[in-house]
Image (cartoon, rainbow, N blue to C red; front, side, top):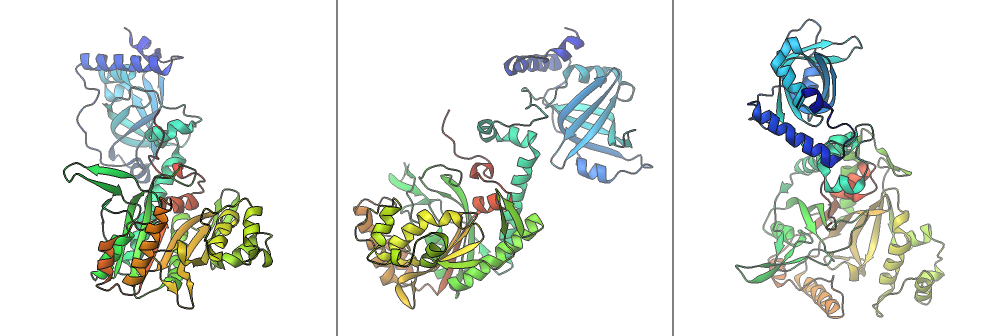
Length: 497
């Protein structure tokens, strides 16, 4: 088969046919005595470093490698664009520079998508583009499938999530989003380390699920012949460490909750949780505000950010609202609608029906807020004055035992952070756990179990402690103007094909 025939075989062929053509090329490569996937060759520069090092006078040689994104043959010359982790560079091949035999082989065997190793010098073309003139060039990894069409990138969302590598190859904005995510996590870590926090790892397999109100995934350990739960939160283990004397502790952790999938929920997600002895939730609001303002500035270069159709301002002091004040501000409800006499009618008017017939007024306000107000909290807003019934791990407000010492932070219409002054009274905690057990018995499969070992740990003394959890995935959404959580998780949970 002639090289011209091989070169043109992919024109107007289906992906399956193109795959077969490339497999045939692999056989031809092997017959020539070369390798389609040879051993690594030395790479001394990235494309970015090479471009930055260019001078008109220099004859310095550069060894680099990258994936071929475009390929244009012109008789005895060729222009290629290759991409590595740092960027792209144009490569110029000449038959008389690399040798006729090597040039002919490359002309027959190279395809868009292949990895090419190049050794050469830099020059500037007539159009002003800095280009690598190859003295040596070698195929170092054969790509057997055609890449997505270069002018439009990979637009099919199902393929982008299932084959994230294609998304990263063809959509630069997607790659940039995940690089920003990595930077966000790094900055969160540095922020806490600068405050003398210690990073730890706690178990993902829990004998008793706890630390959040959520339905867990259950698995079975064969050797121990016992069921375990994928962690829904690391909270109870991290507070054990505070009891043990690690007074400032954090974990960037994977959590698992057996819940639905949506643009804001994935069953497997990433959280930052940190605990700080001798502080309480009021201090935590200022700390979280400072943290997010600093990270927004460092990641985005400013504190005013676009998110969907909204401009969010992290630079201002975050608003603080209670359940009642938030409902009055963001709905047409009146004080009369929210009193003991009329609250049930108000809930019914808005299609909200509680299964708990003994719910307190505060619980009813919480449900009303959840349904009507959360989605309207676009600018950073702290919600305070939670009912104690929905806060089983929080201390009570010293001025009102029906209220929890707790805040949640909402941004872009979604919850971003949750924090408590941690409950450290073992008798109160045991009673709250028992209330949760009773709720489970009444049909609430998200209620806490009774964790006797944690109660015993509390009996050794947990100092007054602030605890904060921040959703990494949602924070990344906000700082990258991404409205679907699947676009900030490299491999989101998907239904099997």
